[in-house]
Length: 68
Image 1 (cartoon, rainbow, N blue to C red):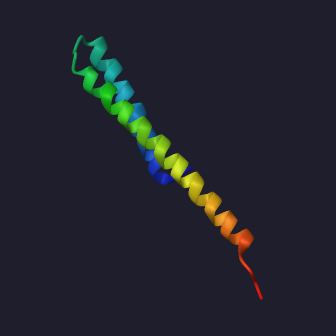
Image 2 (image 1 turned 120 degrees about the vertical axis):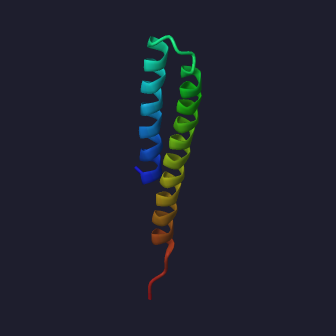
Image 3 (image 1 turned 30 degrees about the vertical axis):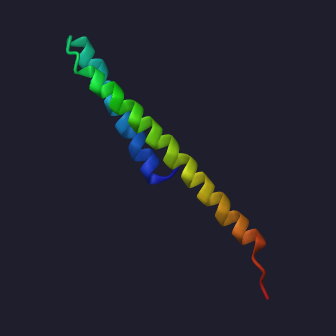
């Protein structure tokens, strides 16, 4: 898993935790945490897919390279 995807996933989990704590305390500021969690999950998905495509391109390049 790419490093940026992992960081974004950690931010997402922390934002969800902060949202739950905010709502339990009766604070409507938790809505901001929910929005941040959504943004972080989208970033994690993007970086995960981007890393996967990068690895696929490397493998294709290695397969198609001509030696000799």
